[in-house]
Image (tube, rainbow, N blue to C red; front, side, top):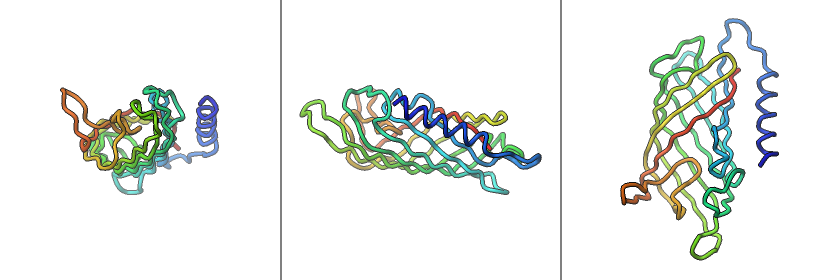
Length: 192
């Protein structure tokens, strides 16, 4: 895990120093790590690009499930991939095209195996989700912070914990629903 984290930080450092931004040329690209994702059993890294002359950006995120602390002690191994398209509503300026409040429809797929608590057998968990999120992204120099919350519809083979390393299935107030997905997070990174 420490090697993975060091490698990601090295990649972020190289990316931040390898691109010179010309005066008047807005920073349209960002690489971000999902803050504290490794404490929940996976390591997530994302890339975002702001499209020219629009108030929109596209973001793709990938994660390695198992590269982090195993909070459920079920030895998960797999991956997640997600794509979100951001529509900036307020706080956006052409000089900072990755900053402001946004709405983001998002597609996500989680694919992993884990050790079932009852049978001790390796069990597959394959879930897809269509989410709607609302968030705010702040850019300060080369630093970017992104926070959001959202929910939507999930479909597939759920894990016994309901946690799919990118979204959580509904399991509150003595009710459970394998088709309601909730997501929230904070990502930190660099822009260029």
